[in-house]
Length: 143
Image 1 (cartoon, helix red, strand yellow):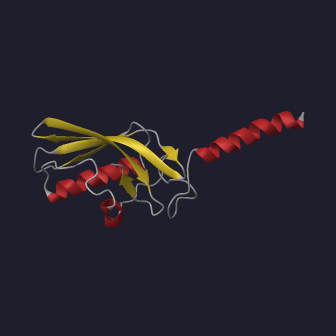
Image 2 (tube, one colour):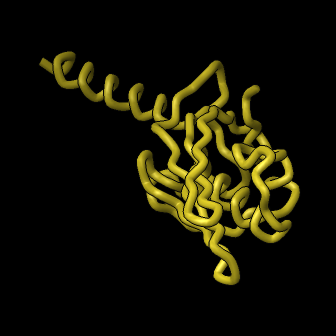
Image 3 (tube, one colour):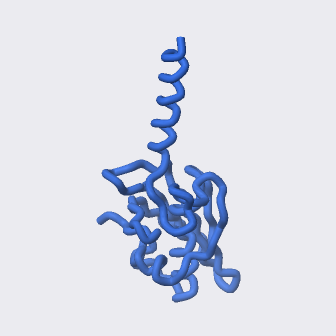
């Protein structure tokens, strides 16, 4: 009878281990924020790892590009699947939103598909891509 109780408990423990991978500093072994944790500002080196992200060659001012990349990082690192992360330049008509899908593992890396829609003068431009998380907490888009 004890064996019947132990097997479901072991299955739950094993599945819990599959939901996250080793995270960066202060993550407690998982990716902090994926379940509503803190919303820390990403530093410039972590944002820089995104390169142009899904922003690509969109005509954006440097401050807008920075906001757009910060929104990508926020969606990838902290947001639950399907949650919209918005950014906006209040001085212009440029804005955008990033939505990340459910994280999944490729080997030991966590990866996520995501969509970034940028609106310039009301015209939406959407790009889709995938990024994988590095051990230092940065995300690298796949090409």
